[in-house]
Amino acid sequence: MKIALVTGGNKGIGLEIAKKLKKLGYKPVINYFSDDVAAKKACEEFDFCSVKADVSKEEEVNKMVSFIIEKFGKIDLLVNCAGIALKQKVLLDVSYEEALRVVNVNLMGTILVSKAVLENMIANRSGIIVNISSVYGEKGGSCEAVYSATKGGINAFTKALSKEVADANIRVNAVAPGFIDTDMNAHITKEERESFCKELPLKRIGTTEDVANAVCFLVKNTYLTGAIIPVDGGMQC
Ligand code: NAD
Image 1 (cartoon, rainbow, N blue to C red):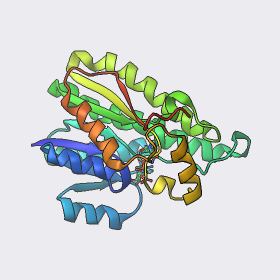
Image 2 (image 1 turned 45 degrees about the horizontal axis):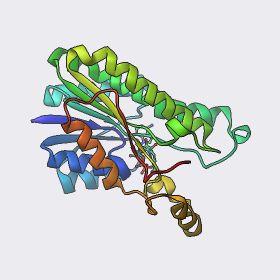
Image 3 (image 1 turned 90 degrees about the vertical axis):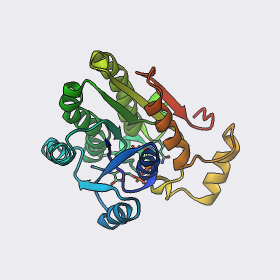
Image 4 (image 1 turned 135 degrees about the horizontal axis):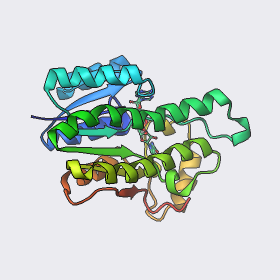
């Protein structure tokens, strides 16, 4: 049985990725930070295993990874999907604490969970890591400067780590979504959505399925590493 750890897997994009990975033959272990009810529901409905842990805390991450390896013996695939965004605002209005939290969850979380699974993957001389970045990681989003910085960091981390671990037969790639319909964007009004869609070449907001399909493509294609795949409807920012 192949084991996949999906961080932020109890809802939104992460849940859809876990569902699609199951269809590819993986046993998904979903990590999450809040909403025990959603995690329990996903486990019951889809036969997942769940682990609650804050990806920004090294001790919790290491405990989570040790638990999975003790239970299943290995981790074949890691999808770093856990992430947060602040309400859109200019940098001058972002507090030190808010900025640090976004950096710690999005960027440090990706680094810490990757580091924690690597020992097992290197010992097995096999592994796949897929990071969920954002279109803003390359293009930058106005009033999303800190979030954009974390996703740009994830892009650089993906490329650098892919070179470092290729010898151990470990591939590291990323998906960079545009505007996807999840709770992260629940605050955006109907009017804002409509005007945003008009600007988009593909004229629609993305779905969690669009992102999950790209993750599966990266998982299946064994000749891809260090790639950042945009799934953004042609968004120019
Ligand atoms: P969401 O709010 O629906 O889900 C976020 C997930 O991250 C939840 O499962 C939550 O429990 C988890 N999480 C948050 N903080 C955590 C922490 N400290 N430790 C562990 N888990 C934590 O959002 P989503 O839209 O599904 O976002 C998933 C990923 O996709 C994020 O990395 C986000 O930046 C990225 N993304 C989303 C969009 C979009 O438009 N929705 C666009 C580009 C990138």
